[in-house]
Image 1 (cartoon, rainbow, N blue to C red):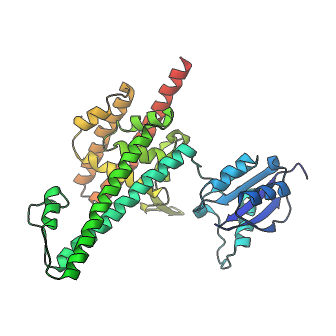
Image 2 (cartoon, helix red, strand yellow; image 1 turned 135 degrees about the horizontal axis):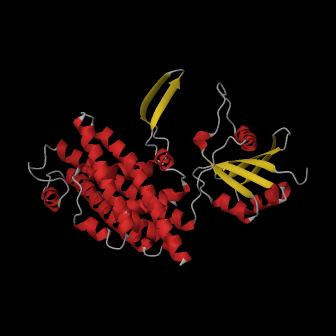
Image 3 (cartoon, rainbow, N blue to C red; image 1 turned 90 degrees about the vertical axis):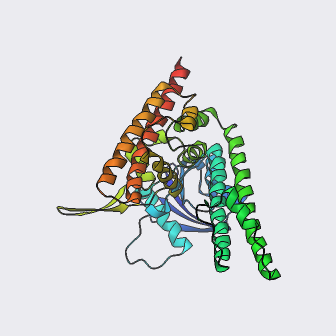
Length: 375
């Protein structure tokens, strides 16, 4: 038994870790709770070890991948599993940390858990940065809405023909003064928040550009290659790579589409099959970027200035894939529009097919890199 594989389930929280062990063909047992500290984890591995025979798992969550990397450094095999794919018994209404750890150990031994991709340091740091910008964009939208609603309560609406949040619009907003000092103070605070949000986004975008200059060559080549596709600029390409990592880890583009949550749900029973809306069970950040990029394909295929500049340093093979994407996706848009489908439905379909072209570009980038290494 000393050489048999030992399966360990961890229910991880910020301060504590509940531990359960499942040995081969033995009852799953709880071994208690340890502090979530590096020294406590090291003692736990020594207690359950040797580390080479341990297979440890825990659910992905807010604690990140620090524990994963520590366990790997200690010599133990570790998997971070998807929480939404952990089997749940119908009627089970008791949930404790101890029971969760035992369930993880049991399901891990049975092979019923689905590991997630764990990013390396470069991917994770870039992902943190692009997600910080995404959060800043949401905060900017909230700040603008607050200011708009404040002005609306005063009976002020922007003049007809004036686009929202342009320089002209901001000058129009700043030109207002209110008689009551308290109202003027509230107005100045709302206006300050809008300006602060813009400065925050500009600073984050500058940081992203600086970070992209320092990423490893494989990441840099993939980001540059993805920008050859219409609708995929530098920020979008950086977000895709940061969220997905190597796109070639998916054996088929349909798996990438499912990872983005863009495939339709299905309920089949007997000879009856019902397809519903998209699952939305994948990476929401990736899905948002793909849907935003899909709107570019409602226009006729063309090579305009910014897209031509982005394609300047890529190979002809990648340019060919990008042109095929324009032709196919615009044709898809036109056909669905002719059938009277809603715009959001059309963009979801286009975004799903766009994921396939992203996958094709990623494979071509890797193929060219392998050829350079072999040469």
